[in-house]
Length: 216
Image (cartoon, rainbow, N blue to C red; front, side, top):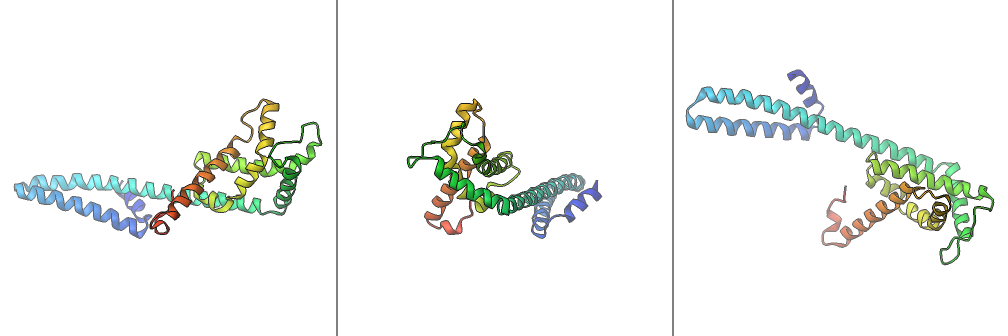
């Protein structure tokens, strides 16, 4: 077990190693001082052994926690880079342009939907590509696989603009297909990123806001 704990400890970053050692030494000193005052050295050595076991368990927990956090960070970065590459690909760039033009054509100045399912469905294809990409991304954010910070930094306000433009159509599709959950995670993504944006604006406009870390 000690070899396993030592291996986990070695995987910690330097700052994490220092914190673990300080915590362990502080506990050891406190126990030794307390028992020395009572004059019971046998109890001191027994306490040291018990503390060593507790310390080993603590190091193992800390190392596993740190590894898990680094693994989640790596996963978030890899996933967000994949979606950025897809979003900036020639195929999706073309789809984004066509989708924006279609939104303008298919809605009135008041934001009402003036298109119908009886029209040419091919006009919807590019808009669906963009919204489906956001829907898949929203699923990952909702599940916790990607930190919302990274998505906000890479995709806001594009998500908001496309969602608000397409919202009348999405509501029309939901009503006419009786599938209220269509693009549910794209809607979730829009709300999550909009709320995150509001939080950042509040933070930036408050005293010392530039110096305070953003919401995780």
